[in-house]
Length: 553
Ligand code: GLC
Image (cartoon, rainbow, N blue to C red; front, top):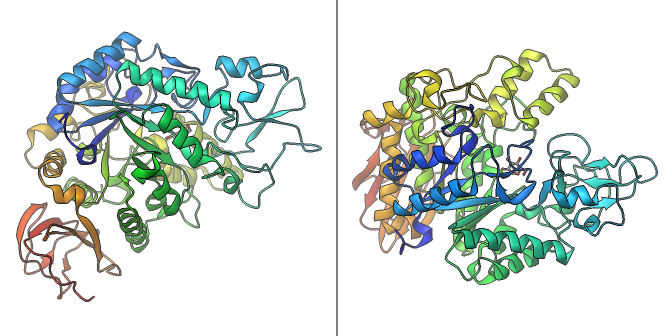
């Protein structure tokens, strides 16, 4: 795989704390990942993205870094990481590190020096502002709830934290800060990693510090100098290497994402955007109990697919990550075992045939579901706990608040990986830091590997198809029947050939549109057509030799 174009690769995301525990302390570790490399090679992925393993007080599970040059003891040591990298390389697997440089932990030495000391040289590493008369400098909201400014204990000043109060935003306008951050990235390149995922990288350039009629995000999202700073980062660090990069873009726009990824601009290789995953936010509010708007999902996905393709940028495509609920429970159906398997495969096919680099989040490939916790005590995530409090304050009942958390919380994806049907699903010999999903006896990796019809086997096949057929990587994308209320249909076209993708997002059988030409050879499918009817959650890809005339709807 070493010579392969990075565009053909598939990335597997690992949340180390919940992946595999080798010490018995109930939390996963780096050696636990090394132990499972054969499994990841069997799956066939190319890159492994590790969410942060640096030193951290873990208020936001590692996205609060207190030392960028050290590994969190909880996860192991720098040597363990070296071993992981070399063992991964032996299997043609590459390692991507998660770089969190919009903010540091307030436990970071820079912040400790800066705090309460206006004379500190590190004061200007962060964003300290005077109080506006009484109260915080602006009314901006933290993404985890509450005001985004925290007052110091001994001065009147406040510091900015767009996330948790223990995650202080860095001042990228200070050239010294940028230099230190470049040093960190270079350190990891020299360490031998193969790529980076840059956390909330479109929030680094803050604009005017003014009160907002909304949350404040219009002032710092894709801010005034963001492209300049990312270009500079590219030039100073990975730009002339063969490392692969992806930027996490919060509430971004298509235009900005084109700029982030057009190769000639020398910024990043690819971007995550979250708009397609907000189609179950009632009135734009995540913390609501709502079902998804299917037409909106298709529209947003396809706008981005076509827009990024035509503009010469590059998408990262994903259903799941450590911040999102499990997709089979969300856009699929986990009500019965048969529906779970069928819809899990359908979602995999739809996503992996899209244009861009696919990401698989640990457990997605075996169809892990949301855990449906029954008590708030089972939740661990700072965001979920804040949201629960604020729902109750708004008068929502405890029962309803739990339903909402069960649907939306980030903890849905953070439960331990299910390896087998033994105690704690084989994740740990100790007591797991977070409850193991109750359905582990029938949903686990061992089972999925032994069953030739498992969701896992569909993922393996999809990865192989991407590696084998250029159309999956380089083909253009043509949305079809966009107003169909149940079917998701699109076509990929490349060098005179087309692959037609048809997926049924509903539980019942649906007749195919009469004008749809389905002649051709089936490449992959989770069901058969019965007189041009596709069964509930059915999906198929049909290879057609020539590009057919576009059907009218
Ligand atoms: C990103 C991460 C998320 C984290 C946040 C703050 O959105 O994916 O887990 O809480 O950034 O670093």
